[in-house]
Image (cartoon, rainbow, N blue to C red):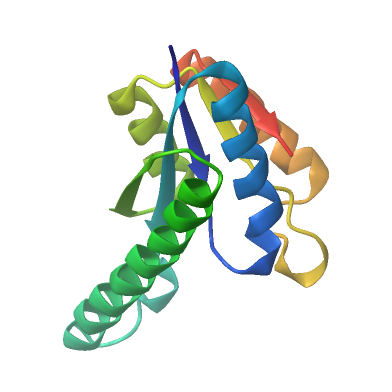
Length: 140
């Protein structure tokens, strides 16, 4: 039995990726971990007390998003863990995959204006994740 980590941002765009990760966990008999990374680096030029408040609020939002993902998994017969981390997505995803000793990392492929990476950058990131973690990475 292995372990799958599914990075998620929440919302309808993420449901397809979450459902695919749930199906993979069921098929493989693996445990499932949903990961939400709070990255507020875009607020670097804002007053420090505001940043702390924003980070706390976004973390709470992440916890809620992951609770919803856990409920989606439970409805399909899978128990999933939820992990919220603070920092830069790429760094925290590598750390989480290493610390959790995962066998598979599942990433979504957001479309349109919500895409964080273009296709080439997404594939490069997936290759880097595989190299740094030793885990298989699937972009769905």
